[in-house]
Length: 109
Image 1 (cartoon, rainbow, N blue to C red):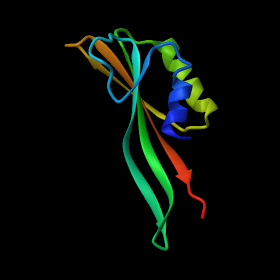
Image 2 (image 1 turned 180 degrees about the vertical axis):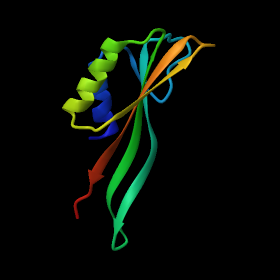
Image 3 (image 1 turned 135 degrees about the vertical axis):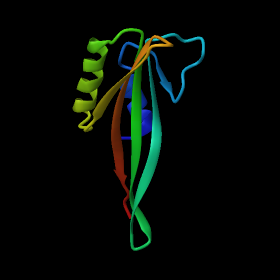
Image 4 (image 1 turned 60 degrees about the horizontal axis):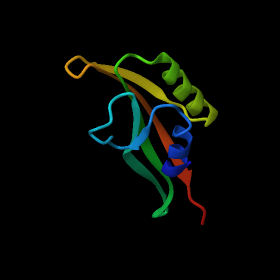
């Protein structure tokens, strides 16, 4: 799966979806996703696969268990093992539910 394919899947969900950061005029709820970092797998001096570490952030003003469940169902359906963390920012009054996972793409020679 590629980032554009992931974006197409995320767009099926209700909140608006943005890559990396949302425009300042957009208020929660929204989904932001980005590539956190990447690794390559090398054999005989050739890159045989890449692993992109992806984060999806669901940003809301109140914990949104329904949208969390929709994201989890989507990731499960795509066979992507994920990890969820939740952060609450009292000063901005937002909940940030973060899904972390990897996309691994092999290369043909």
